[in-house]
Image 1: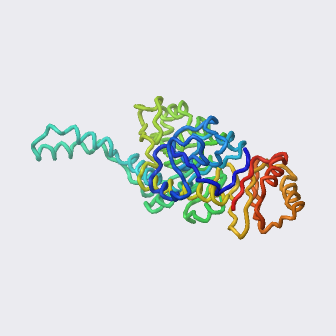
Image 2: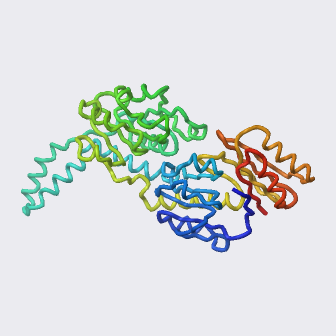
Image 3: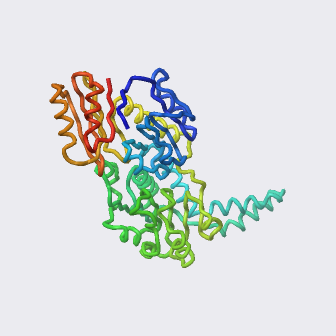
Length: 399
């Protein structure tokens, strides 16, 4: 990909999946053109539509996912082309948390079964007889309270920590385990959450388990015969995170044996529909007006700042890097994470007597990203010389 001079023309944004108008309004019409049919966009905004390598065009610099998961984006392929993929962690956390609360309540009180029983009494017209039938029938739907039960939370990020707090407020004992717990997440977490040393200890002590981890190579199928064997008999499992975390064959075996009493999920699959002990919602986790608006506004702000200033907030494939603008001009450089590239860039600038005002460099796995503010406007020749450096992926210039 060649250099792009920011500000030369309108930024073009391709929008997919009916991105909330609250988010689209964040793009001023004076500098941004938005369309579902944009042929050569600078950025793509997407919710659930599957993207492929064929969606990469020469001008594409960013993809903004209005949500947390990026399973519908081939991140590796986009990274190799220097395309920054953004997501919106935490923007839909409250919506998911509330659905988990509903799942917890449904698992204990026979609510769905009781409502179906009442619906079946529609032929009764005598109030007294209806009351008799209701009182006689309600015994079969006797449940138990959440208060005093132990909830195990696997994954203590934005959603998991909110679920933990909610459960504490409902009088539950809460255990948590997250091998990748960040410093920020640790600060958010209530001191009343008992932190387990490993997943086996978490599963062994919980009456109910809720999953809040991403679907990665290391976590796909993590709920399987081996890990389910750690559970107490009759454990309730809730999955409002990702379908791929659960091995359905092993899950059904655990339900049949009584190791699990219920599986409550936001991901219906043919193998599970109609199975005893399974309740599934149709992927409702982030399906609230508020969550859709929050995700859209958050991803719009991130993509806008990236296109206008080169700053990166909440990327899943490039380092987060924010440098306040100064006077002068800005170079944004994406490159392979190998030695000497930054030194070569600075040497080129020094050879042309170009003074660096400010700069910031960070790396993430196989890629690195640099913002370099300089006093004079970079010329096309300068940009071409930087692009010739082995390992440089792309260069952008900002006025």
